[in-house]
Length: 444
Image 1: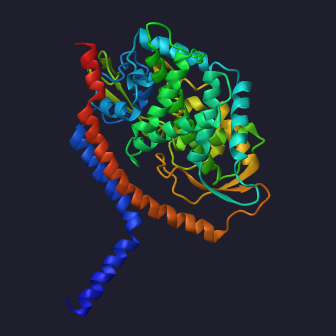
Image 2: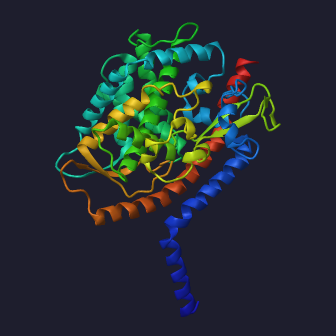
Image 3: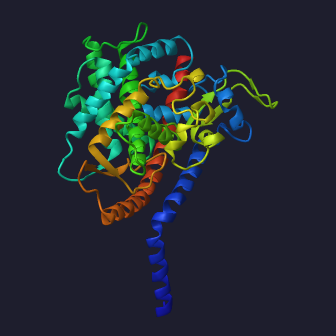
């Protein structure tokens, strides 16, 4: 190789390396999607999509025939894999019937607390966690990690009606963290981390020390799986994800922590731009006929895309603007942050907004939030941010720039990990066939 050619190769390699954070992650995402389709096949009818438009989204979602949860959908094997142990007791994946109604009734009873109590629980837990941060300097944190102990304490107190000690809090956080990192493909699932919480919960149920117990004919094991899935998995994960999004958005705007209406607008706008739910799949138990003349056959897998739906209607833009909620009505906005009431909306939709506001209020009263990290709906970075105690100087331009560069390179490396771990888990879930095997055994 002559000197000019060598120089050219070096320049090209250097340019490729320098621009790697820009082109590698999108390329890896396309490859992951290709692998997912090759392994699982193309399944489902996207809603909104070519067959069912945004104008029919809520009507189809609310249709009584859009009630199948897991049985008959290949995608369910993957979701059950991620939600193990006991995914068959996860409220979201229980099929319609007496078992679902009993579980849903129990969840409603646990969450039937006054708003004042919800505010009190979230405020107190947030204070305890924030007290662990230094008050004499700026702290770097991953907001999702910071907030997980908050919700571990809150939901432990709701379920057990007693404070959560540090050892149990660590068990809950380890379980929830393992579930969400596996879901995002940043690590493979580690069942031993989840099993420690399962053993603790089972011991409490067996000892009669748990006020929340499913009625007969549910077993102690099924109650344990239900508690772990509903409260110490889904609730902790979703509330922590929500707070990560809210506080990153708070870093880009101004919200008075003593103005609850302003906080509500901040939270609503965050959940509009970054909905917590990505795609919910439902299996039709009967044909669904649309006014357009289209008939959705029995056994169809409907893929309800929250983000795509919220990008239609009068609030369909990508701009983050909390002020829009001063004049825009929720019912007009194609805005479904907690799902649709007629088809198993989020059971925490009553307490969650109050708790999110309380936690946000407490953080913003104590700290200024600064972040220059990329903010996406999936947020695999866990929400990098600087927290600066009130009254102290916030990070300067050099630290902000360092965070931006660091985040870009972390994202490049993380995308490769997601490709490897995600591919392995897709294959492993298909091999184990947790959902399909369960229904084969139940109905054999």
